[in-house]
Image (cartoon, rainbow, N blue to C red; front, side, top):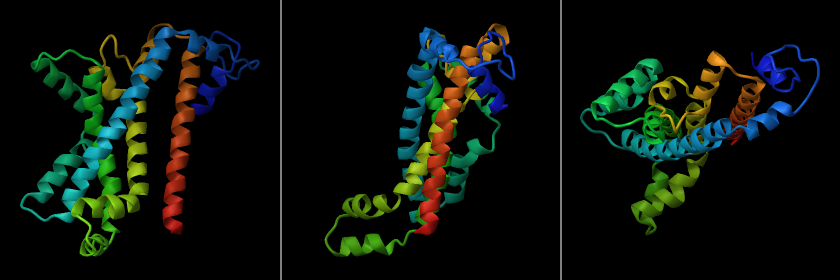
Length: 240
């Protein structure tokens, strides 16, 4: 399917024709000329993806630190709560969040989409950061504090640099999940905050032309590059 989408985006025909009878950049030009597609790509999906990745990294790292470094009553319940979105079908989660926002009389917007994506992105950061923390010797922080560093200094100057590959991997996964999500976006996107996957879905349903294939190709390229970066990070971790 990916090969078909990429091939169609470079084809000269206005129909979804495979294999293409030639090569042209016309549909990429049409994509950038479409205000709706550009807005969905750059002003909604890209912005929400970056914000979701940033917030999920902060929240997920904090949660992972609490779960790994501290022992307290109900720890397993807290861990289950944070990881529960991985077990619930996204379509059900989207419907539940939609009903929750409706009960609060909150209109669908980019912010409702962001908070929904934060729910599904944070568990990936927690898993990635937890794996890094489990393999990290806590005595390194203790040694830094014995030499005069405060707990915060020891964390930011010792622990955080050692976790950078885990944090980066988690952040990239969070961005990919948000950037490519359609299940939650169908429920949580507003008229002025339609994400790229939702826009592509609606165009395919009703009219559509290969400019949406061009948008999909750009999305595939971005996600593919990020996956290669994650693979590179894990390869370096294995070597080290």
